[in-house]
Structures are given as structure tokens and as C-alpha cells.
Length: 621
Image 1: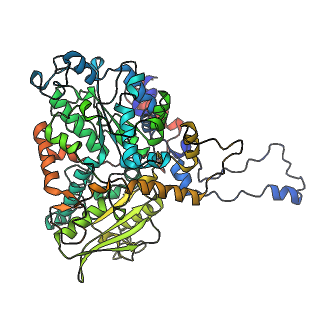
Image 2: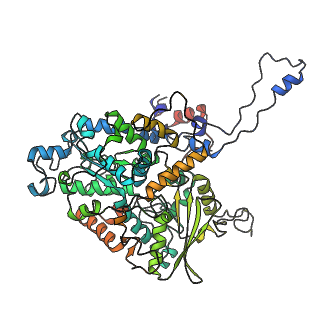
Image 3: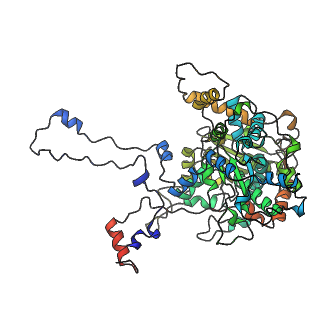
């Protein structure tokens, strides 16, 4: 009987028959056993026995369903929470504390003592000795908290750093006195992502790439140049949707890692090499606007197996990002430790207590003396991939202009870089699943006619009209994000209906008596998102903006695009590859796979399944 319970027979995919919250099929009306065939039916009974209205599935029902998420993925996501952060801090002592205790100085941490290593941890893989805690924070998260507490985005970032690394933060209530050695602004790594994204588009549009076609089954491989139009890959909700429901778009997905993933790879690869510690002793926490980022952190492609030179198949894969929490969960984190987030200092941490990153060049890159700016309103709230690519082409073509045409709604916009009557490049922005569905439908390959001599795709024309009536296949790049309005509207952000509760709890607003607060409607939700966006786009001190608009008039230096030096970013990435001994491709890019499911397929009955197992060799019967 052991074969019947074999692991080979398990299917992890949750099919709609089990998990769909609103199945399309309507169950047949069950006849009562006591019904009499000769009974006279009155009008009242006839009306009551009318068949129910047809079932319908809205987009909200679909996104609330777990049918496209495996049970394993659901478990992996649930394990990432503020509770996991606190448990880990209580279980392991910070390696920074160990270094300071053993050496009385930051010399070892600076890479200056004992040949850059600590004798206590040199080459060790014993996780009980401690961990090096590193956090990365997205600007969208800072903007959400800034709107809640009526502070600037800069001040919100300082409050987060004070919580994670400050003297009155998490370390005061940790069993081991552990806290985070570094808190990284993902805007730093985002700049490297933007430069790499522009290069990816240039390579994809080259004549050589146009003639190349990937081998069957390798459409999502890391070393395959994506096909135009290239689709943004920084949104894990969109990637999950594409891999499981529309695998034909995999050749179009950008191979570039997201800022979260790239930050995780950077800190683990550099710190493990410089400190000679195993990647498992480096714990990376990402604070993001979206719950789907937890799913991204669980991807097998984003682990040490992709870049660790000494990795072998028998080793456990170590995630590049160990845990992801959101803005709301960050407040739960503070509350669980009895820390009033609103009372945290709004000033930056003292530089005298900061441990430099163990490479001077990367330290200056990750922690610059002048704060990096968020992007302009035109770049959008989702990282600005599309706008940076447009500005790159504009800088390469002096005198060119960026044309903007709004689509059928605010989340669909078409862009063109034009010079006179010539269109140099076309791109678009599609936010929200409703618009994404229209996009992928137009990218679907034409269906070959089954009739001899018939035309291809007669019943469905791919590449249909886009935002301004053009075909989507004319685009070179499409910025795709699952959330309407972009990343500032992520599922993990503080929602408008939660703002009053948070403010009352933090003591910055009195409770509304006994009268319940009116439930916010669409108008209030829109106004709240506008406040978060305002905090996001105003996240720059006025003194830091000098020279950052040099590339917006079409006459800027080709190397400087929106204040970002392309040559400097490429030098940083080359330096990273050099000091770790890992090829840039393994550090910066990733891959995607088609996910098979049994949805819509005919399933074997239990009798057929058991009979099939019984006749196999070693079936146990």
C-alpha cells in the first residue's frame, strides 16, 4: 500500500475544484426525496424553484482566489512576517555585536583587522554563532508611512532606520541585543537596475538579436535576450500571473532582477566573500509595498545556487532575501516590541556609530554623502524603468522630444521619442490586471488555421490596437505593474481605512468618540493615494536636485541620464563582479519558467488512479 501514498502522486497545485472561492459551474438543483410526481405545483412553488441566475466571476473574485497559487507558495509567504523577524533577532546574536565585543573596535567589521576576517567566524557555517542582519527599504514604503504620520519621506526613512538600528530601537528589547547593521535605501540599487534595463532594450533592438530565436524550452532562460516588446519583470504579482497563465509572454520578460532581488544578491555575495562567512549567516530583510514581494523572495532562482561559486547540488539553497515585510507589518513589528513608532527620532543615525560597508567603493555607492532623489512625477511611482529608457534614447538623440498619449484610462499611457517626423522608439505603461489582460491578449501568437490554405489568425489578430490605436508589438518596452496606480498603491501599504486606527494607537490623534468613523469610499481612497504619491515624489531635499534635470531637455550628455551616470553604474557592477569572482550575468539577471497546472485538465477518478498504481512495478499488491 506504500505506493498509493507515494510522493510522486502528490500534486501541489490547488485546482479550482478545491480552492476556487467562486466556481463558474452551478450545482444542479437537488430534488427532494419526498417529492411526489403527481403533486400539483402552485405558482409560489414554481417561482421558488426557478433556476438560479448564471454565475459570474469578477476580477476581484479572481485575484482573491488561491487557484493560481500553490499550497507550498502560500506556506512560504505566511512564514514571512514581523513575527519571523522578531524570532530571528531573539535567536541569533548580531555578528556586529560579536565583533565589537571581541575586538573593542569596528576594525574587523571594516575588513581591516585579521586580514579582513574574524577568527571567530572565519569560514564558519555554524548558524548558532550569530548572523549579520541587513535591511533594505523601498521609497514607496517610506512614502506610505510619511503620509500616515504627517512627516516627510526623508524623516520617515530616518524613523525606520532608528527602529531597525538605533539605540532606542529593536536592540533594546531583543534577547540577544541584536539589530540591523546596515539599512539600505533601494533607490541606490534601483539606479543600477535602470541602467541595465536601458542596455537590455538596446541589445534586444539590435539587428543581431532580431534574427536570433531562442531554442524551444529556453524562452525564459537567463542567457536569452528577451524579445520586443520587453515587459518589466520587477513586479512579482505580474510575473506569477505570466508564468502560470500566459507562458507565451516569457520570451518578452526582462531578465533583470528587481531592486529587492539585486540588493539581496549584492549584500550576500559581497559580505560572504569579504567576511568569509557562509551566506546563511547573512540575514536580509526587505521592507516593501507589496505582499507579492514575499513570493518573489521564495523563488528558487533567487538563491545562492545562482551565484555562489562553491555551490554544489547537495547544499541547501540560501535565499538572497530571507524575509519580506510591508509598511503595515513594520508598524506591527514596532508595536510587538512596545515601541511607539511616532515617537522615534526623525533625525538620521549618528555617523560615528555606523560600520562602513566592507568595500569603500560599494560603501560610497550604497551610502552616498548626499541623499538620492526619488524620480519626477513623469517617471511614475514604480521605479521609473520606462521613463529612464525614454530619457536614455532622448540623450542619445539631441533635440528629440518625448510624446505622451493617454490611453483608455489613467493606467494606460503610450510614450514615443520623436525627432521631427521620425519616431525613434515607442513604449507604454500598463498598470492593473484589467489592463494587463488586454496587453497579454494582444501579445498572444496567432492561431494557425486548420483549413488548408486558410489565413493565419483570422479569428484573432494579435498585436491589436494599443493605447493610441497602435499595435502593442510596435512597442520596444512596456512597464507592467499589477497594482492600479503603481507600487505606491501596493497591497502592503497602510490603507485609508486603517489610518485613523494607526494614528490613535500611536497617540497622534484622539479617538472619534463612540461614533464609528465613516467607511472611506472611492473618493477618499483616491485622495489618500494622492497623498502617498505626493510624499513619494517630494522625497528629495531641494539642495540635492542640482544637475538632476540635465537630461530632460534633449541636449544633455549621453552619459548622464536623469542625474544617473551610466558609466559610473557600469563601473560599480563590474567592480562587484570583480571582488566576488562571479560573472555579472549571474549577479544581475534571472530566469523564468512555465508553471504547469492541472486546471482545466481531465482528472482521473480515484478508482482509475488506484488501479493505475496497483499495476505498476512494486505497487505493493
